[in-house]
Length: 297
Image (cartoon, rainbow, N blue to C red; front, top):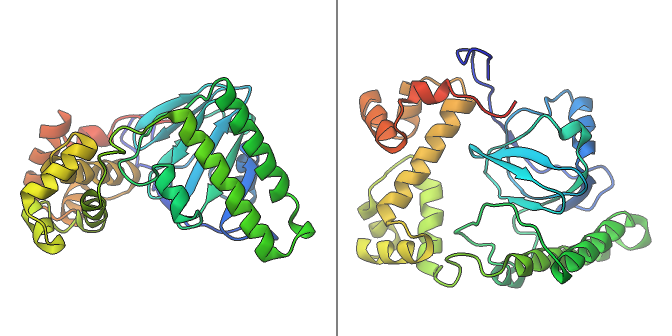
């Protein structure tokens, strides 16, 4: 973000998963501080906003770490973890170069369905730092140590076997973190109806904001969608759709060079004034005022 808030905002860069040379496909374990040097080697800004297409588990050790995920700033204290999901926009704080921690990257689909279900990895997501304590902290530490050890032993096993070992050990780490977190809010209420609605909203939120359209496409009534969404998130189906449109509007306003009118067009609004009313009603500010706000440097 420019110092005076008027400069062109930094573009968000979509980041696809690319395995490190010699590493198994699907998962990577590395030190946080190494991200800074790797970005520099590839000519990238390590503090630029990114939209990765893969999962990231970020754990802080002896020093805190500050970062922002979709306009919420998080301060990870020592021993804390943060889970960033594919498609979320992230930005590291100015302490990345001196960061003391670990990052575990893995592709969507790498973990087996049983782990996904048991760890409540389906939406709705709980986005907050987690600090395991006592036996939970020891379980997470041991799981991470074993995962890190096996990750560094590529030559000791056939590649296919090595990948399966890492899949199993990552499952242990994810399950240990889920155990430390406890039941996720809404997890018990999350249903197949809501999961299908969530996927449809992710795909089509720029095409329609009408719950009726989603109901017809999915074969449910609007009331069924609202019941399922309220049980999972505490929001109505209409609020859920509008929340997703608002998030994408914020991402485009803050992290692209698009004008407010271009953002409105991209998100399916009839005109820019309609978009401005939508945005101001939900944020209290105009799109232009939001764009001029500050973010993590």
